[in-house]
Image 1: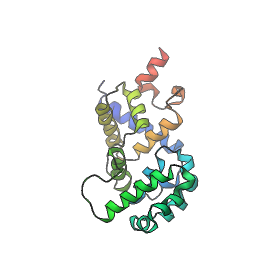
Image 2: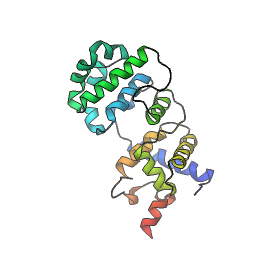
Image 3: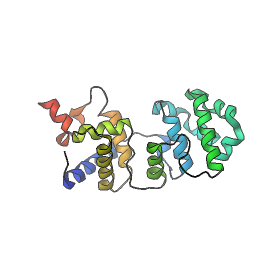
Image 4: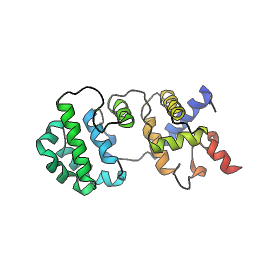
Length: 205
C-alpha cells in the first residue's frame, strides 16, 4: 500500500508528539554530534539491552574517548574497559580495527560499520534526514503500512523522517518499538498510530 503524502505527514506528526511525552532517557542521546561517539555507541548496543549499556556508558566513553585512545589502550586494554558489558573480546577487536582504520584514513566502508550504523552516524552526528532501519524500526514500519519488503520499508521510513523534518524520528520509532509496538504482544490499544496502522486493523477485525 502506498500511503498518501498527507497520511505520512500525519503519522510523522503524531509519532513526534508521542515521542515528546514518552521518549526514553539515555546518556548517548545528549550531545551526539560526533561521529566517533555514535560509532562506539552503536557497537555497545549490539546484542545488549540499552538499560545495561546506560549503566556503564559514561565510564566507557571516557575511557574510549577517541580512536587514538583505543589504539593506545590496545585490544587487551579495551577488553578490560568493556568487560562488564559482556562480549568484550569481540567488541574490543572490532573497536580496535575501527580505530585503526580511522587513524590510517582508509577509504571505503569502515570495518564493522554496516548500512544501519552508517545511517546512525549521518543522522545523529551530522543531522542528515536519513532513516536508520534496524529490526525494530523495520517491524514498526512494516506493521504500520502492511509491507514486508526490506527496500519498501526503507523507502517508507525515509518518507517519515523527511515528513517530520528531523532525524529524531528514528529515535521515536525505536522507542515506539520498545514500549508499544513490541515483537510479541504489541500494545495496539496504547499506540498513537493505531488509527493508521494496517496491523492494528487486523487485530480489531
